[in-house]
Image (cartoon, rainbow, N blue to C red):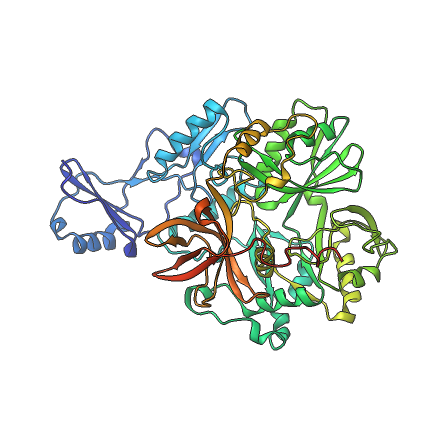
Length: 569
């Protein structure tokens, strides 16, 4: 019979639970004691180090006075499996038939057992596995020195409250952008994405604050951490002028060979068999019809495609592509490290690009959602007229050895317009305004493309089969039960960061998938999956930020430039 409570005391990193007729006391209040995988042996019980338990035992007797004078019956150092991100390591390894369900803590155990059984039996899971996938780690994350540093840090921080926007404290400078020297010259404030040091904002843009002072509300407390008003100024400057963006967080998977079109069309829900020079926005679906990934695909040649995904998912995306490509006559090549990328966006983007290339970049000569090789100075660059921020402009994919040369040419051409560099903070708020989805937050495998607002990317009538086609066809026939919606909050105190509860009356009906302040419209914007009966524009809701609920309303989607006139000019 359990008569003593199980409890955690977070302030001193300790926990307590009953063991038959004894009390078990555990502590993280000591130095990390690392065990290498090769030294695990037959038991997780390691030799006891009493010097590490002096202060914790004093605290235990204070919290639970009945322990005073008690004798230790069993004492040992327990061994825990810390993964790099604290999540389980699950899935089929590179060795076919060899599966993993490691680094599972008791808090994960039920979900791990359920999901690994589904995965091994059916090849798919009810819940999204992106955060637990065995192939989620990039090569640098598999180095022993990196693993040791990060797991030591994880041990020290296991009970600490970490701000969602806080970059890791260590290790840093593992991967540097191809433009790193230029970013530092412009006083970039860095964050970390897939191990890369990328700009969150630039202190050199403080000059823009006076220009946009009345459009950028102040923040306080938790919501003001790892944020700057400069992000708002960079957002608004892009809407009005032209700005330059480091896009080295993109990955490129190349598919080539005799069956490149057949294979790429099999992977993608949209019709990829378009003329050379076309760029298509599409999704990959799971067999059960969930959104496995959204991405852009460019056709560079009759039998050559580039699929653009994110660095954070590069290993999983490459594994997915290679696994499904095994029965096609194709070559699958990760060319990500051969190219850097810049974004040139804003109303004056064309004026800057025209100064540095002899290619026709007019609206008539270079269509929206098309791509081609152009020259910038003496450098051949693959330019795509696409934009993740909802403004006229181009993604420019540059041979990595020519990265700074192209930056310098564009930077000099942009001096006429006082072109500014812009960081990831503004990218998030601009794409939120435009209604662009963020995979892993707004869309993932637990949602169908129809629920996510991406049903238009699914071409059920295109030639041939594709992964998830049957499930998507069945889902389209059913009435929607939920839908991804935009909601707005007028009160500037509600600095939403993601994950906040969404309320209809006394019922918590959903949570915020992603959010950001819409500096162009003057409101906080959030996305959330709502029951279809609440998804109508104008529906009154509340969103809870810490202990306070703020009025919210279902808004149009997208909120900004719904007719896309800014992109097509």
